Length: 137
Image 1 (cartoon, rainbow, N blue to C red):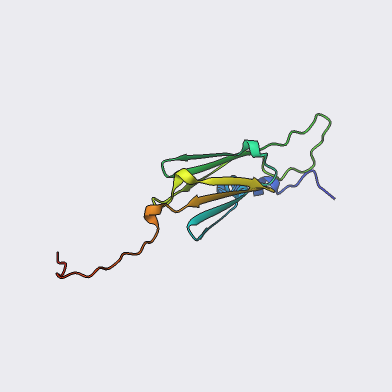
Image 2: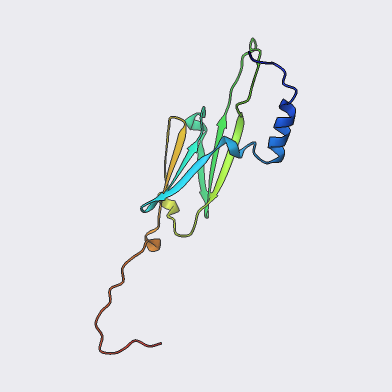
């Protein structure tokens, strides 16, 4: 049975806010590198794709999203634990990433972002040639 009143709910909400967990726990992220790309998988359950915004400024990628639930006049809310409103996360991208070629897709409540490694940051082979003289500094 659901309870309309939880005497500890206000204490739990206050402790989450004081610990800074209210906004960031809504957007849990997995990040990893695979080959020449970095991948971010951001959980955004219940978010309309049109409310998701990605912006890149200098080396900062900002993700904003909004989740709304509008209840009607005849609705009596018994329990509301799912976060509502606008949420934001920022990621600082290293110089070795190509911010101009970021790609993103949204499927089944997961935002997937692909960030390629810049060509100048990729490892490369240096050929060693034969020389009659020794290179010195």
